[in-house]
Image (cartoon, rainbow, N blue to C red; front, side):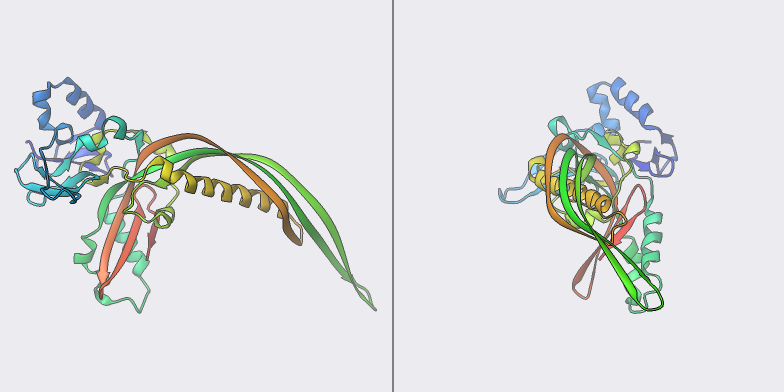
Length: 318
């Protein structure tokens, strides 16, 4: 029927909201590959959009023409998937996620908008000081599904450490109370491999906020296809892999230290660090899009942001 298709988190298929037909990703991919270039416009994620640059060279906004109704869509230079404000059809900018910008993989949405609404309402339930209008239906309609760009780092850590520990034992008889303290010098040498340390590659997303909705299950990471983006927003990365590397190293080192200190503490009464050394070895880096439900809202002039993992349903918020 030529209407726009949306990727449904429940059926894990592309669905037409007008005629009700559904298509799986492999069928659509095979159809696209069988079409001649001039016929590929039937599927919007394969269609090149008409891009018009703003006359203001300093502006980061770009104007695209909707292939369905011809309306103008304004978005910034990093937007890869959006909606037409006039006909609400999904629109993909394929050049933003092709070539060297093409992700290695994507985790499709497993939860829907209604799941995100329900999770937000559960978060707000039982909070008597929350303003009454904060959970209004109008506010909940602002919840938006978005694919956030992530760098996934592999890293190995070699660790060595020295600790002083004590083990205290007390007992008593009819006259006295006794305390025995044993002192130990502990040595630890270990190695740990970390796979897929996630770092969000978008300046729009606060790093600590994205960490709060981890982890993602990489077993459901699949090969990237533009079709997964239909019906959602998506951005390409605007933070380079080099700019995220130092923070990924820090997360790797912190985790290695915590693992070793937890092992060293064991059943000792106390354990203090004498010295430690961590050597990191960077491995492969992959680029992937992760599903996130976002609600950005204002109350009395102050902004509040809530996010839900679009795969697991884990929720975080201000």
